Image 1 (cartoon, rainbow, N blue to C red):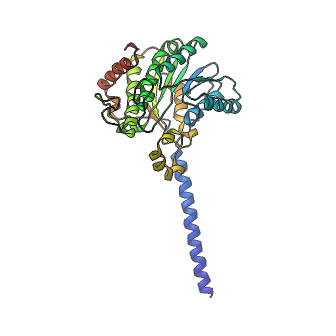
Image 2: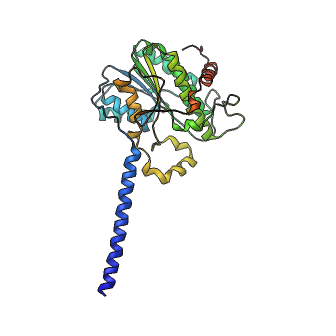
Image 3: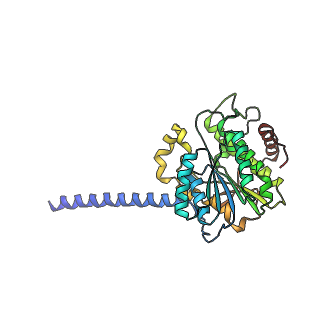
Length: 324
């Protein structure tokens, strides 16, 4: 009987050890998956004016909260005023900063982008940081101007917005533009003969194309802004647990088993925050960052010929002059 009891306790001990080891391993892997945190909490943004697109949730909201805590005047440029206002109230409460403003901006509408820009330029005399953060994914949809939704929002919408705000950025130097892209850009390609996905459509292909476009835009604009005091850099936030896939059932299913290993929005926002506030990056431009470090984008993102073509085509599509 004693021998049998000893065997039982031996197996129980082994089982407990395995379970504890698994829990510890999951904890360590989850900790590693969160990545680095920007450590310079003492940097202030008092007197600075910041625009963040798509920031009523996810990494945009965490970015807005962090910059509000640093004293910045934050414009939350969001499509849904009701959700934005709820997020604004939470940010004001947590940051003790009342200079957090909701402003309606639908990046799927050129009219909305122009209206937002006009109103902002009437109300403000400076813009220190523009953060192009808003993101979307899902089935085939089109913007109000007839562009494929992901390319229209991620690239064309932000392309137009940035160009409309360049003059005020010039008058506020040193100023910064931060572009939230993705490592998935390496799987994308710019379809010169089918930018709008009219001949064929893949939601993941369209997403990757739009993120590659973000990097090519960053590369082009960095060159155009040399010597102006305005910098522009792009980043990969990591694989973050956000509402980005709210319209993508397949994406939700694929990511569900890995939820505990996805970055929290707070950690996903760290590289954006670094690019927006770190004084060491004041003169760094045209670069790509990931996990709070400079990274190397794919060769497709360093194609100057494609970058120039995309700039010209984008300017034509949104109806502005080519020169920045």
